[in-house]
Amino acid sequence: MRLRRSALGSTFELILDGDRDSATLNDMAEEAFEEVQRLEAQLTAFRDASEVSWINRSGYPGPVPVEPGLFDLLGVAKWVHQETAGAFDVTVGPLVRCWGFHERQGHVPSDRALEEARGRVGMQHVELDGERRALRFTRPGIEINLGAIGKGYVVDRVADMLEGWGIHSALIQTGGSSVCALGAPPVEPRGWRLGVRPGGDGGERLGVVTLKDRCISTSGDFRQHFIADGRRYGHILDPRSGRPVSGVRAATCIGKSATLCDALSTAFAVMGPAGTRRYCASHDESAVLLVEADGGGTAVHEIGCSMETEDEWHEHD
Image (cartoon, rainbow, N blue to C red):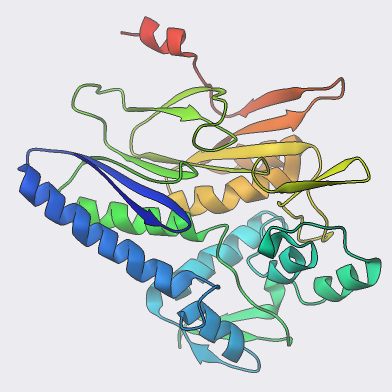
């Protein structure tokens, strides 16, 4: 059974396989979609009534209580920030607006505007009190935006729901950017065959990966970028410099958690091939990076994983 709904600024899709009748699977899918809508209403920074918007208004001087699931998500965001030496940061919102990407009207900011925005960015200014499940911003102007981790979190939450109902064969994805492969399709015990597409749905496919109880997320600047004075500026920003990433056009992360993969795909784009290799060498995740080549065009870096072509995949049949 395959069902789709508009959510999270894209299309949220469920593919369910199992020994249940179609009516039961449909009821499960509808309940899952209701949870997706609830989480979107909680996590978005673009609705005044969301919990994230309320936190942004009240976090300084704070502290403010945070719903347990959201508090745990912020804990993951803080952990990824630390593990990637600041390459991932959910407080990057002021920089996104400074460069005009918030309204998809990109422009190069003045040095003064950039420095002002940088002064309001930094996960080190977000304090999390585990005993009280509370948050406090230690500096005015700090805010959180979960756009680079929220989709993966929602995918994980839906996967947890399905597993709780005894569903062990499913594909959960949003816009092709964050995907969780539960088990394997009944007709293919090796797992779910997924294309690695840096440009998202409809984009060029670099290769094929086969996933079983694994997740995959991709971040790239193909859909959000602008040209100024002959230079290309993508929407993925390095929180440490405040400037758009150069060189890496897209990054894909493969791992056990869609939440982590979502965050790390952005971090890998910022860290580049060398930093990504160091991270993957000591963690469970693997990566594929599409990088601008010195002589023009792009080069593919497979780090800890190996993609297959369609022909190679079928050779295993």
